[in-house]
Structures are given as structure tokens and as C-alpha cells.
Length: 98
Image (tube, rainbow, N blue to C red; front, side, top):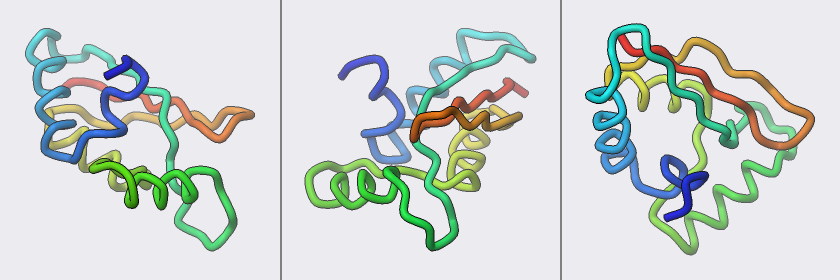
């Protein structure tokens, strides 16, 4: 799996396992950043929604909303501190180890 696909394509349990390993290698306050799609919750069109449908049809992963990212990071001992939109369809997620 390519580095950029580490937490997007696997199902939640595999993502948590990956993040658990990252957390175990760090210390409290350590930061992890991910460049990922964040699915908007409103009805507006967005590339993340199209990718989510494609992944539903062809893979075991999914794109996630901000609350889903918060929950995923929390399961691995991280707190999602901020989501930084970019001029592209992806955002930068920054989480801090508890």
C-alpha cells in the first residue's frame, strides 16, 4: 500500500491498528498529520463523495466525515485537533497523541 493510502483504504479496524502502532512509537503530545478527503455533511457535490461511492463498489475502505475521523483517531489514542482545508479536494488532518 502506498503511504498516502495508509489510512484511507483499509476498513476502520485496520486503520486503528496502523494508528495504534504510530501512537505506540510516539509520546504524549506527538502529532500525526494525514492528507485525506473529508466528506462534507451537506448536500453539496464533492470529490470525496464520488470517491466514497467508488470505494464502496471496488474496495473495503471508505471516505470519512470529520466526526468519523475524530472517532477513528480517538480509538487509537489521538485527538483530532484541526482540519485544514486546501485549495484541492483534500484536507490536512492534524491529530495529537493523548
